Image 1: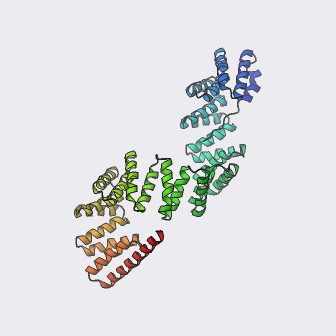
Image 2: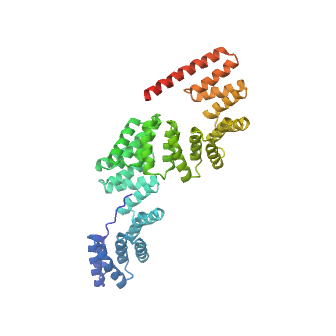
Image 3: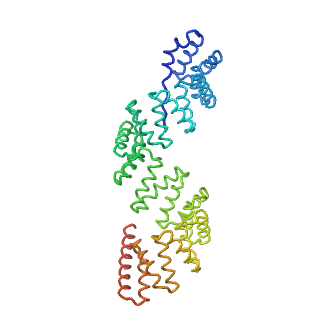
Length: 441
């Protein structure tokens, strides 16, 4: 977030004769320091202002100017002390409050900065830079409704500011005012055509409107402007994954994780793409690193278990799924997987208990219904298996294996018409899968 500096120096100079009529030496020091600050000569301004505060320790403007100088020199703690001294000496002065707000925002003390800016705006509701800075800070702190109100005023004050229009567009997007958000973001893009941010947020807006073709075009454009745009890479991956284009999604998720490994979703999405592509060997290190980095996230432990099972490491799979269940005992996916693992090793009683519990938590759970159906076949309870497998077939109508299991049941129950129907569905789905595989090769 780019904060706007306050234009205080010329105002100060204009008022100096009235404020310091009896202090010609102080007036001269402040005039000289103000000129140095305006020229960007902060090292030269510092000793001048230190002398001014020594000669007149009760002068709020001298402390305020020294705070500006020290802040520009990176002496944050000292700058804060000078601003707070100025505020103590003149509680109604807006300038040191506004400058302190900027300083606090720069050092990520945003909650404190918001309070300071709000106080400044209470003293002067029309203070231009405080309106702008507080509006920008509200976006940064995700107080979007308050941000909208201030940034609309800020956009009137500085209509040619791309940064203000961008942040206004973000706030409007978050408050679901999509039409106004589009106007603000388009304006920001036209004002700064080289900036990827307005383009990315226009893509996000299109994505929220389910205008996926437009969203993809915006995300691609944002990446062209900034190949290392984390969110644009991630969202383009999301867009491809939405249409099961996992091979297309993979490189964008890879880029997002390479650029930012601090977000769990980046690990989960990339590892998930590898699983969908049946590349469990590639998925394994992704989830192992994620599990080490985020040990308290059950979803990561679950996917590590899925991956380990995929490569035949049942011990690791069992360990990971148990960790997931310790973190979240009612995690239906983990319960279903644990049931499947117990089924794999022949512990049918434990498997059945776990699968039924998963179904009780999520009756539409495909894997739990399918695996319970298979278990009931395995334990010669064919009629009992039928409703679970039929529900699984309804949940995922394109899964050929479910229909094969139903074919087996009806064959063993000597229900030939039903068996023939399921076999026919199985053959059609298998042929369809074969044709799809050939096209992808």
